[in-house]
Picture (cartoon, rainbow, N blue to C red):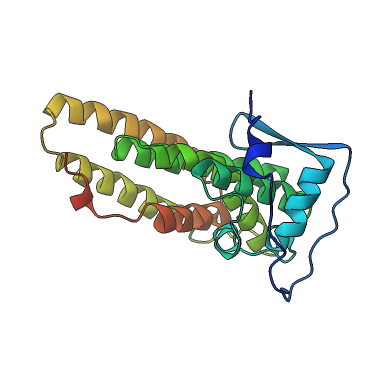
Length: 235
């Protein structure tokens, strides 16, 4: 487990609070120290009481209920978190705070985080990796929590679910195959291995999608963060 000891350097100074936001900020109980364990990566982030309070006071948008989407919250005020690692930490704090309001959602949380990781893994294989996919792992927990909030009042409906799920999985497989087949300077045996790994991850994703709520969340997540054309796959 990696502890980011440089946090205090990242956040030694914070500016004044943003202008008033017309949404109620949640109350936070401060202990002598705060340890936040990420639900999506093997990291724990530690803060002193004063430092965490400073973050909350300087970032009211991170602790609202109803919440802002994590991307919108970060865009609104990323002071002190402008690096890629800083953004990872911001999203982890966001998820930690929102989780307190997303009660009785443990199983959905686990399912969404695992499913989002599979989508990220599939596209990492598809694009042959990159730092963006590594940082996305840390931010997945925030996206999962916002989806839990968004679907909190929606009950799963299995009508037409199997057909829609099969259609999505088939489309995903076809898109991956088309993209990999267009790779240049890549031997055929290498393409076969890439597709084998991708299809293995798709099979695992398929098992995680148990209802229309998870299916809709997965489709929206993929469309928003991995919507690129096959023409990008040229090396």
